[in-house]
Length: 133
Image 1 (cartoon, rainbow, N blue to C red):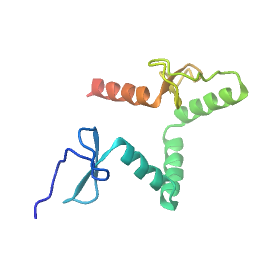
Image 2 (tube, rainbow, N blue to C red; image 1 turned 45 degrees about the horizontal axis):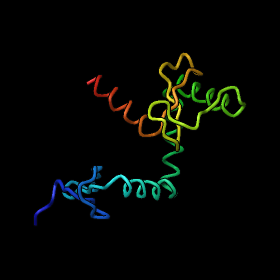
Image 3 (spheres, rainbow, N blue to C red; image 1 turned 180 degrees about the vertical axis):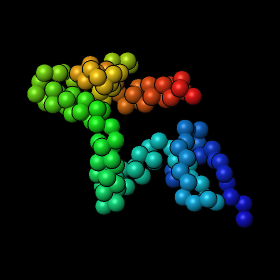
Image 4 (cartoon, one colour; image 1 turned 90 degrees about the horizontal axis):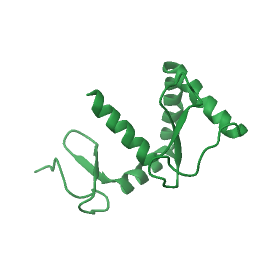
């Protein structure tokens, strides 16, 4: 039996010529999902009992491991809710609307935030990671 180690199509919807995300279930079988199918798969997992428990546990671990980050995020959330800090409707880089996230360049200045869409935020961190390597 021949196992495919790499495909050029999504394992779920079978779309071709799209960026794929690798997901391995075991050592011999590998699955590749397009962005939409992977988002649906992860949404189902996060809504499950195990997914919710894992999110709570991971949040607790991160809060104890990185207290400065947690404090800065809390301060931004409180400032947005109280109206002291305005969260724009558009990304500061690409000006797209949708889900906007705050990015801290320096956690010692917690209210100095760059507002990015999820795509630009992920791109920023991938470029930053490549620069470190």
